[in-house]
Amino acid sequence: MANTSPVISVLTSTLTFSAPLVLAALGGLCSERSGVINIGLEGKMLGAACATGFVTQATGNAFLGMISGLMTAILLSFLHWLLTQTYRMDHIISGMGINLLAGGATALVAKTFSSLGSEKMNAFPVAAYWVMAWTAVFGVYWYLKNSRGGLRLNAVGQDPDKARQMGLKPVKVRFMALLWTGVFTGIAGALVVSNAGSFTDNMTAGRGYIALAALILGGWRPIPAFFACLFFGFLDGVQLQLQGQSLFGQTIPVEFWQALPYLVTILALAGLLGKGSKAPSGLGRA
Image 1 (spheres, rainbow, N blue to C red):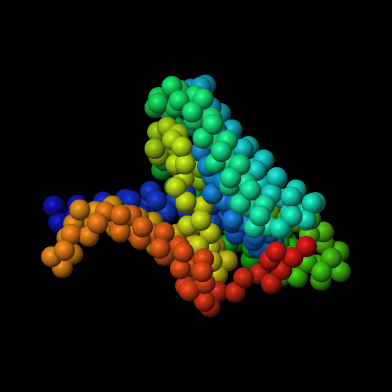
Image 2: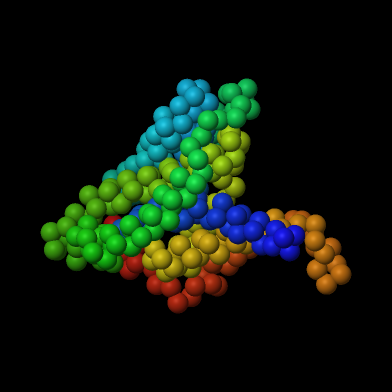
């Protein structure tokens, strides 16, 4: 039984760490399949986690807390849509601005309500979020392949000019896509804070960027992105298990294992991994 304990620990950690990544990656997929570059996933998750945590603690109502988190992420997604589609701001700058806004605002909230944040929140069962994550993967897959909305999303993301000639309105399609980005990242943020029990400053810890890397590794497709998220979750589980362990007679610093998932993320975002993946042709175009 002792021999299986580390395996069970890694598997449990894989599920725990990968579920919010799956949800955030699906949010990024909706946005980027419509042609909107979205590196603001981190900020949306962080804002949702903050709102979910503090509203739940203030009201004692987990449902109200989750709705607050969803609304926060949706509002941030709407801001990203407004900046990129109405004011034609560069998508990367808009996304980074949202991350900075969320980081500063949540830090202020955490400092202002620090006494409230120290309390344990009454959260939904984490398993319920896991079910949402796994179900959403196949729901998005079906939507992209079999629905009229999915075909329109792909058409706008591949070539917005041809989509306009067909009578589609890219701005409207992208609005709906970013709405769903807000929904998925909102649930992801709520899951992160529910798993921890209370909100702490910068608690998403780069998960939005890791989810974006998983999306790229998965070639902007839901099923491969899901497996990429599992891979990153597995790396997190392994690094927790290997901390303090020796390798080939040498003790590896804890920082090395902690940096492992982020190293793979950097390689993916730099294009060194997933070279066969092809981004939507209309990504970043007006």
